[in-house]
Amino acid sequence: MIVIGGGLAGMAAAEQAVRAGATTAVVCKGRIGEVGVRGSGASGCGATEAGVPAFFRMLDKSFDAHDFHDRIIDAGLGMVSREMVSLFVEEFVRMRPEAAEIMGSYGAGCSATLGTPLIHRSLGFVREHAKILEGTRAVRLVSDSEVCSGVICVDETSGVAFELCGKAVVLAAGGDAHLFSVNVHPQCVCGDGYALGLKAGAAAINLEFMQMFTMTTAPTRNLIHFWQERFLADLRNADGKEFLAGYLPENITVEQCIRENVLHAPFSVRDEASRYLAIAIVEEIKAGRGTDSGGVYVDLRECADFRGTRQDKFLRERAIDASAAPVEVSVGFQCCNGGLLVNTRMETTVAGLYAAGENAGGLHGADRLGGNMLAGCIISGRIAGREAAGHVPRRSPIKPLRFERQGSDGTENELSQAYGPLFTEIRRSAWENLLVVKSERSIEMFRDRLEQVRQRSRAMAVDSGGMPAELENLLVVGEVLAETSLERRESRGGFYREDYPNAIQAAPEAHIVTLSEDGRVLLRKETLDPQWNPDSRDGLGNVRWG
Image (cartoon, rainbow, N blue to C red):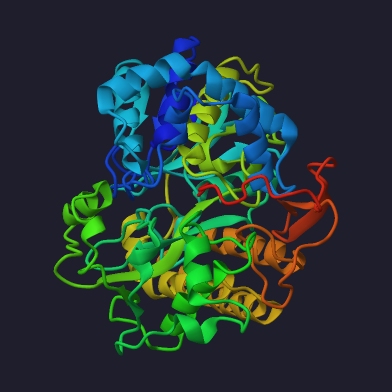
């Protein structure tokens, strides 16, 4: 069995597969367990006082599994399957003894940083019992659109390609953060899992629903959660001017905007006013009034309540001293709430191909409760590893193949450097046109830029022997995301269309996409939650959920 990805979901899958008796290989583009050096996603992107990771909430005496289930449904806004939510909650509660053990080992103070120690809890066992291929890139799945039985890999140092065969494959390669120029992930998180699955014939769902967050832009990039209203009292552009009020409708005050925002730091249109904070920040930067790092200023120097907090300490360790100078922030991509369409066994629509972590769609909806991605990585990873280990293949193993990339004068990394300006163009256009604020015009602008990059990269490939795999994947994922965003003519949760600012007043339909044989995006619609009542009270209310 083959696991693609070395983050938390990948390690959970590999460990379960080994324990189930499967001969297991793990393919990772970099070094497993090292944040920012490929292999751990955003496991170390932030820390906050605002809440405890979902993984530990079950230990609270007031924890109610039924209430937790309903809150996930409420957050999903009709875009999540109740069957998948029930599975998530059942597995979540089953981990209670383990959560108590981890709490004792790492303490209640852990936040998103918890991902790294959790990876290392499994890593020693996986290294001892599985084959680890670090510095190895998965470039194509061996599949006939119905059955998956292996992976074409490339050694990043030598550029040599080979086929790795197995009875099943688990995609746990992280999301598509680096489709956007502003994000909190290592540069390698380029939608590889989505693109590999789609090109192999798998379907994807809910890719247009993303979680966006305020984040620092200099000297390091990290999530920053303003969980108290006073922390946003002094927000200015690079010219030193306050700007938030200029983006608010007449019936919305600055105080209301900030008050709603601190309840759920991720961008959402489920309330009336919070959206304008992110919109204002993004529009100021796009208008050329941002800092050299692409941010605006939040001045926390007079906020005594921020001193000594977990987030303050976290940022100081990353060279950001909020007591010495204003903090430069923007709004960036944190994670995707969708993924490849899977069943309760985490198997995709292609037999033998499983997905976990951010590659698995269905555990989250239009919005996601804070901390659920971490728990989701563990749950989906374990299920995928266990089920993949027991998969009965329909194809006999093939002897590994080795071959050189024809016409290539360098490694995949050298190719990526040569194509650097094209990566930059896609990412900047996606951030400006496809993240916080979308419209038919902005989506078409992004598609036009995507086509220009596609044509130029094909021309360059004639001389270089082929474009980088990561660029190919960004082109695929970018086209899919543009198509699903264009088709969703409403605003819901973290998805905002300024030309369709209201939600559809009916049970919404999910967008399920596949690729045709010639690479065209095929889209169909399906109601995930027929029980959803758009007129029901928002169960999240005024409770912190993000």
